[in-house]
Image (cartoon, rainbow, N blue to C red):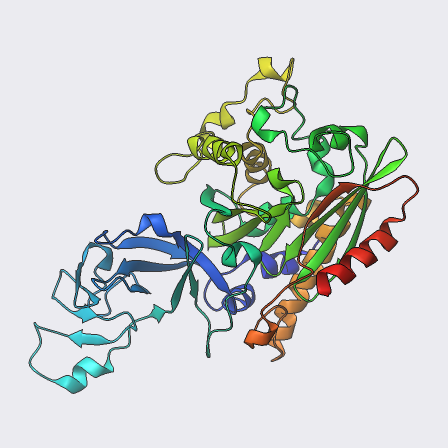
Length: 426
């Protein structure tokens, strides 16, 4: 459990808050590239409680600036894309992608007045079908070269999902290996989920989660966050799983790749009680197979045109009590995202952690909270927080990986991991 003061520190991310100051030291996704095609309309968005507008100039270059015009606060998302910038409809002020006001046609000619205006603007980059921004001070750090962000075309599928809750409580669900043995239980697993676990004779992950519903959880801090080990006993052998909390608002899990790549989840605050989760499904060894694309389409089919879940709090996630009697533990369909969303949104807009009763299965969540609080304290004390990448030579993460396999009989998981880590770092 956390006291209310610490809970506020990790959940409040608006301008000027300690948590918001921390989050602004990192790059964050703000949109999918498909949302802003050539000649597309400017896209209004909200991130870290700031209202912004994303636009693409005639030259194809992106700009991200404050939503409200610096003159009289008109909404610039209705503006015209002209001369590589965005022109306000109200009085014609034209802002370039760096936030400079370069034209004020309704004002007397006075260049000095024009140059006084400094409109909010943030740098952007495109990677793997996603647009990222950095909203902090100083020169931007390196955008991390996580595998899904530098993988060849065809190896990554991306989408985003809106959540009606604070970003951190949703990410905590990714750091909880034990819940998959209950929340996601279901019979008759679809064929497009049937990628088996390494070290078995064709067993599926869900079957192994059912075999031992009380896994041992270990966690260790890394330079990028927290590495999470979950260990299940399966017929006297160890089902060994490695996942990660990636500082400050990301996680990696095996997902449908079952060790041949992973899912990267990036939780981006809209404000303190809403956020977007950007999903990167990454396959390492080869381009996605048809079954992977089919599975991803099933997830997309659960979203409306604005990437909001069709199953949501307003319709109680279309829970079907009859299906709970036969094949579904949750009664909320087959898509794990829906089940996870129902749980994290059901805890309220901002989870009250002062009323929790945590146990050994929550070790990784406790470690992540401590690390996040320490990062906030470091920044307040003038120190660089974790996982800010300043040099290109540091922008590689060979041991940021996900593992999912059943070890040989009698194998020691720690010795196995030590050997695996040496290979990754070689």
